[in-house]
Image (tube, rainbow, N blue to C red; front, side):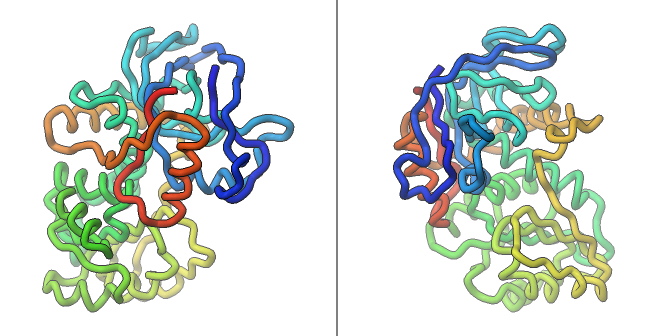
Amino acid sequence: MKAVAYKAPGPIEREDVLQDITLETPKAEGRDLLVKIIAVSVNPVDTKLRLRAAPEGDWGVLGFDASGVVEAVGPEVQNFKPGHAVFYAGSISRPGTNSEYHLVDERIVGRKPASLSDAETAALPLTAITAWEMLFDRLDVKRPTPQGGNVILVIGGAGGVGSITIQLLRALTDLTVIATASRPETQDWVRECGAHHVIDHRQPLAPQVEALGLGAPGFVFSTTQTGHHLADIVGLIAPQGRFGLIDDPDVLNVMPFKLKAVSIHWEMMFTRSLFGTPDMAEQGKLLNEVAALVDAGSIRSTATEVAGKIEAATLRAVHAQIESGSARGKIVLEGF
């Protein structure tokens, strides 16, 4: 089967950092599905993993988001059959989706939204799982905080996670959503996703939030640049609020939150599959709920560009765009 992979980690400018190769098609065993990949999208985690060493003596295949069709199933599979259209975000501990065929545990797979194309669908899984788990499992946004419990600030609203977070908040809660974006086009995008208010994350956040007259938000979800915004977050969040983050600040001093008794929540969407947790199947269930919301018209795909085929040259260009910080929504690739 065709695949895009790397052996030596390095900067995206190096042409051999991602290569077109041929690998043996894997076989479905246990609860695995063998999925014929139709479309994928690229996430910041792909660019981070590309800078780490590949498995010793082997090719490293990146990619997590996928939309495709079940080709074969393992003997223990319960919920899928060959021919089913599916979408999912894979596991960080297994080879990725930048290949013609891919193995994935059925428990983290959902039925593809019927109303979307494969390219539109591929934009959703990783970010939707991340947003859903942060909002409803970690921050528990349906349980109001004592103060500011009807307001949430989403930092980095125009990115993949921010884009779907705003939509899920509007579809499933009555919270007032403040989101950050810095350029006119990204501010417009955030409004299209449903943000009630948009502020500029290139400027101090606390004064802008205060100027809205909504009071201190009970919830803050930081998707990017958390280290840069940390002092502002400490200042603007309501006492007894809940703060969640997904990025990797070099240093995270949580002591300033103590005075306000703010709880800190990390989200890592790969945790359930990596550790095989007893609630691993919750990811498949929530993807099915996301698909239902899409088909009902309550949320939409965050795909903003189909960059081309799933091949090394195209993936290198997309990695470069994501690393530049200029991406809006999700960039997808389709076909081999």
